[in-house]
Length: 203
Image (tube, rainbow, N blue to C red; front, side, top):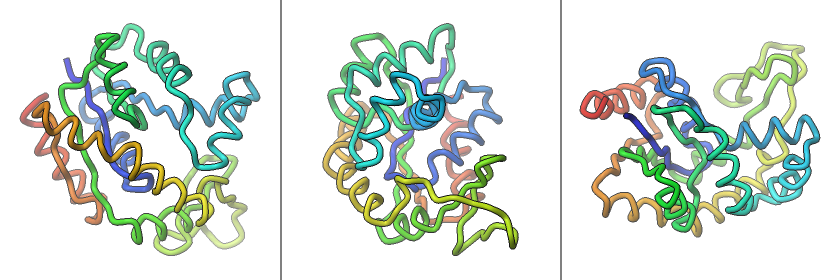
């Protein structure tokens, strides 16, 4: 049984590494961000509740998130949680419903690099393909949009929320002996190599 919690600031590359892990180790990818965005797009009750909160860079409340997680992991033995838990209380709530991870991967990246990554990120609304105006610009003439929560002022707010609420999880999982840290400033390929080396020891 492989249960992974991905930690790291927004824009550290967690989603990219999650996709690689899902493919290489046949894990269910449970991205709370993707689930919330899909609900917002569809205009569901959950989406309406989450839209205003996400737009301000704040965190969706614990009760909503735990409900999403319980629903998403039904029938799945091996999974990776991307975007949850984000607080000590949420981590404790996971334990209460017997969904404790056996590995916490922490992808570390400094704020200045993250601001450049996220504020430069653009998405093709049709294909959902992601680009970056600084490092991987979209083809000329392609219509791309910036996510509301990628605006620079919101990114800074998200980082402040992360430092206050989520960073304490690093110590939480370190004390449990399951935290492994990877430098997220490296190339995607090198981060993946580091992550793979860690996975070889547990998978």
